[in-house]
Image (cartoon, rainbow, N blue to C red):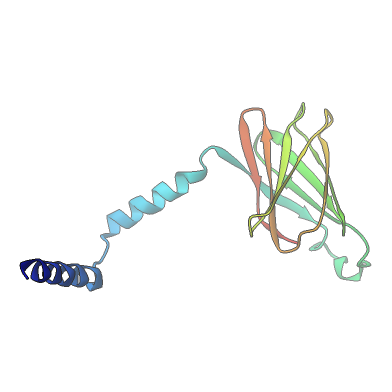
Length: 148
């Protein structure tokens, strides 16, 4: 019978501990946010520098025309991509060959190697939030997320 009482006491103490509101000290919160910011320290961001869908006159373009987006980053690296209904074609301005990964926000991933000129091609079956991840030399580059 003693075991039951001990279990009930333990459960009561645990229940109170879990239901009490415990404020997190501000310095702990700041430290957690700073640590979270370091999660991608080894990645370089390629920022969206051009999107044909937001340029003047995009609304009058025919729906059959491909969309063109460009991303630029540190060291003069850039990625230019043409997106059509069924095809993604692009060129990376890094010397030599590397690999391009196309990621959807829902976790779908496709990869394509680049040739010596930096060209690559993928089939396009995705819509929604997507980004490109590039591995060039020892550096991993990621683009901003865009909506297809």
